[in-house]
Image (cartoon, rainbow, N blue to C red):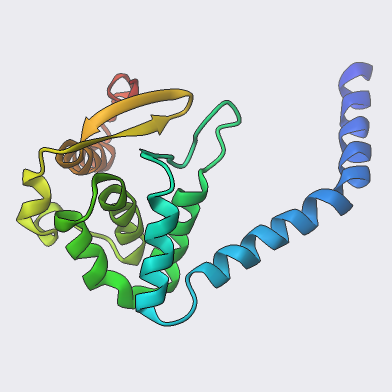
Length: 171
């Protein structure tokens, strides 16, 4: 290993050691805040997460912005899907009836409840003509909600078949 690489490794450990008292409590606080966001009566939780999701008119996905960090709405959706399996009927209804941003976040949460096939979702979800903006890295893309849902299942089928083309992922 060259000396410069060795020195960089040492500096990485030193920087981590110095800043970990600042970073680690923030990570713990974030997890704690996520946990309590989805705890309580389901009706209150649903109101709370919808308010978070509707705070912006854009869906921030798993990798957003220059840091490629997940947006708060995405983290809340993932936490809701993992911890509140009883929210499945609300999430299914949101795919058809809710505002576009809420419908896309509800879809994100629903995918964490259990594995779904296209046939498991309500047919009305694939007939939506409204659209919303969503982020893909640093790119912002406007897309119909039904195309967003379809895109997930097309991508999943391509991944399962081993035929994934990254060209389709580009905005």
